[in-house]
Image 1 (cartoon, rainbow, N blue to C red):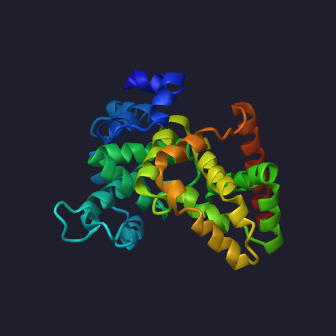
Image 2: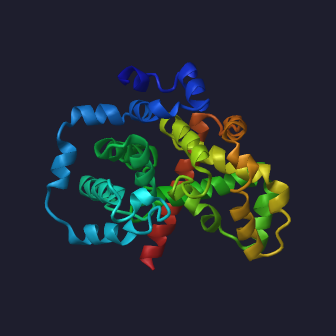
Length: 293
């Protein structure tokens, strides 16, 4: 899979992945295209050493607080299950908190790690895939400042303003911030937002193509339901419309959904990078000015 990682951007590989990775190969492909396999191979025994490291009471308490909130309807994550994935989830999050002390633990990581565990059936592979997401694909999404997350939500707002100006005007008119309606989309990577198979198809592309996939999915949802969203007549109504557009046959039929989403262009890489850089600088500037006050 190292060769797969080296050629992650090749057209043939992209087309293969966009069509959906077979379930039995999904974990292996994710590990390869994300670089997680290479990292795991370079660091034998590292995961276990993290689990055996010095205790951090604050980190452990933060993780425990979210254990019973993670997939409560899934019997595998309930106390008393055999095997109990709640313990596996705790280990993965604890190890990651020790590995990346700048992040530690952030709400939302529990759902992401939980999905990884279900797909890989491996603590160590789940840890390295989580590191690929948090440390590389989605930098600063889960840090205390959440700068990357906030920046990308603002970038989505700008993309909507450019491509779907009527929706942007509606949001402005009713004073609805993008952070309110799409935070869960970005933070949980559509887990518990869209149907399971659709989420997995999105993640296939996310590990291969990077964070622009989240924007493609978000824009696809909003564009497809633009007329429905524009029926909103109040702040509350707008929020409800955004909850509703994540349901129904369009998102359930994952093949069609991914075909439509895959045709959504997110500009050329250089222009895309510059757009995100501008928003990040603007956010840092606002924070700096605020701290002076």
